[in-house]
Amino acid sequence: MLVLSRHKDETIMIGDDIELTIVDIRGDKVRVGIKAPSSIPVHRKEVYDAIRKENEGASTFERSDLNEIPPPRIARF
Image 1 (cartoon, rainbow, N blue to C red):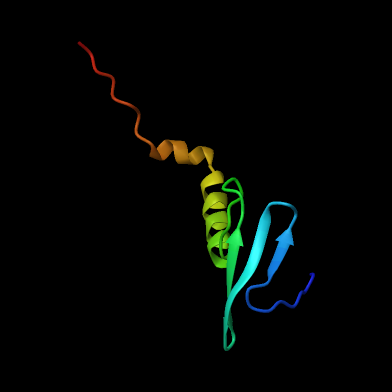
Image 2: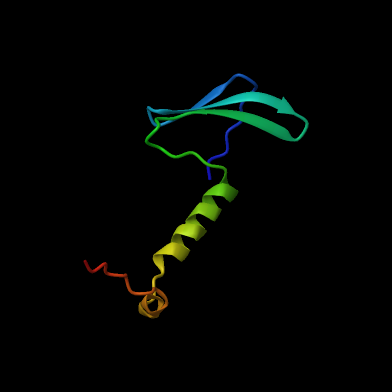
């Protein structure tokens, strides 16, 4: 892990497209502003972990789950 020290209003660049700016420092909290292309998702880690967990749960599909889905109704005219 790279650890950098920054003061308020100073910026860290990640590659050419991502800027992290220290917006405010109050006690033990630091506010960080992030500029990134819209194609790069930016989440707090706990939100990212929840999304990943939900996606993993959705991707585990069992064949037995098919038995729980009722067959489609076919309209006859």
